[in-house]
Length: 159
Image (cartoon, rainbow, N blue to C red; front, side):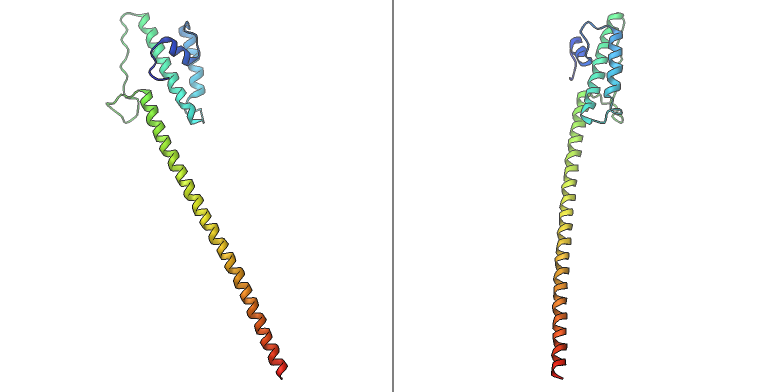
């Protein structure tokens, strides 16, 4: 859900009926925000549900407050990203940027994994070649030893 446009949409995000009162909204928000908060949720794909929950809650609380008093003026939203002064971004923009960053990170991780696997295969091939070389050298040394023994025996026979 992005850019919630109606009370029904906001209530649907929180899992509430459209006729929910302020107490039900607050309870649902607290429960869901604890469940899907990025610090408490190891699954990165579920973090975005948290931002949708926050957006729905803000929408409902703003509309509830505006109904309560005629003189209510909502507080303008400031920057939502640290170090992003002067630029107001919606949760959907943040989500898109974070998804892009995650995709880039995941792509780099896969590339590093491929490089590690290639290096491991290369190292295994080197070890295999070294073993083959060692075995060949053992066979050559065995042949040399056999020839040396034959030469000694030939010398002994001639005497």
